[in-house]
Length: 275
Ligand code: ARG
Image (cartoon, rainbow, N blue to C red; front, side, top):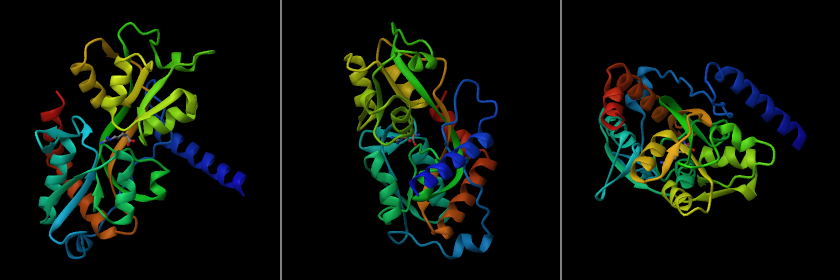
């Protein structure tokens, strides 16, 4: 039975890869799923949306992920926070942001303690078993941060014969999942935040950090002696996750994102944070 499940998963991953691997340069598409396009009818959109707290749209995130979500004083700002505010506005709801560990977001969404997760979250086949995803609003790249004088010069060095580099990642992220798969538990250390991973790198405890490209850029800009490799580790799609079966909310969020893409709002928000 296990074998059959494993085989089905391998086939599913292969199909995903065939669908998503075109023209990605060096990066592999490590089973990250293409974001769905959930066409909603107009009637689903306005009439049936119910939320965890009436009149509010509660978003779960992990606010240590600049420029998507991070603290400015005691306020959570960033691309996702602004996109969520626009979505809430379109739904006539007030946005409430709840900060939590990244690996708690999917549970919070599927257990119904928040309405949606927006956290630079990559759509993957595995996550699709637990939650639904909106259409994608951004592309993500898993990048590799190394010290400036590192022996690691390309992503291939990590796989070289006899290479046993220590990799740091953020717990429960795709960087964590893929790196653990590729290099094994002993070589991969998962930190609660990307910041802690970068500190371990600066302290010489690990040899590289695998993390999304935009936060990687922020970490490199804020810390001396680090650089990002030119070759990336994986290419991904970011989307909002929503409780399985909550199609009214999913359709409403999809419709909102589609409009925010079409009228250039999302481009404007991104341009504000990513120069
Ligand atoms: N894109 C990666 C993933 O989905 C990392 C996202 C981390 N996001 C955050 N807000 N800390 O696994």
